[in-house]
Image (cartoon, rainbow, N blue to C red):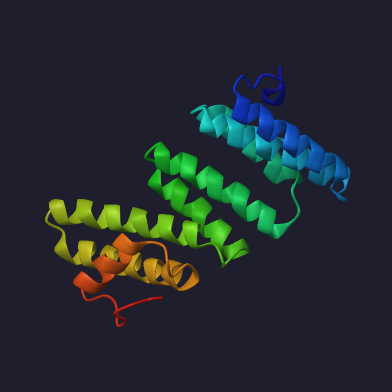
Length: 173
């Protein structure tokens, strides 16, 4: 049974009903509508922690979706799943693809920075100070990009940039 037919909570049912209404009135071709159904089912599965099912739906959506902006969100969500599973190299790949299609996606830039920062902390704990500093610099560059796009977000990153001397600006907003 498709996920859209088995939602058992009010919010999922409401979302599904609204999405179905929008899908019916949306002036899009059949392929784009089918891609949206896969994307919606992927988001629902992801919210339920059913990552394998979510990935299956996202990959199907990618096969059908032609719009670059919509594809960027599919790629971003795939990146989130891989990051959640500790597959940081895969996550970086998907986040970078998302940013390539949509450079105005601060959440993907932030997530890239978070991974580089995590890798920097790991390298630092292993005594690889030069590698750690290089990774921290990468994290800083991605955080600066994200903050320029969303200046009221990522306050902790702004503080980290200031404390570590990686920011020339005192305030981003």
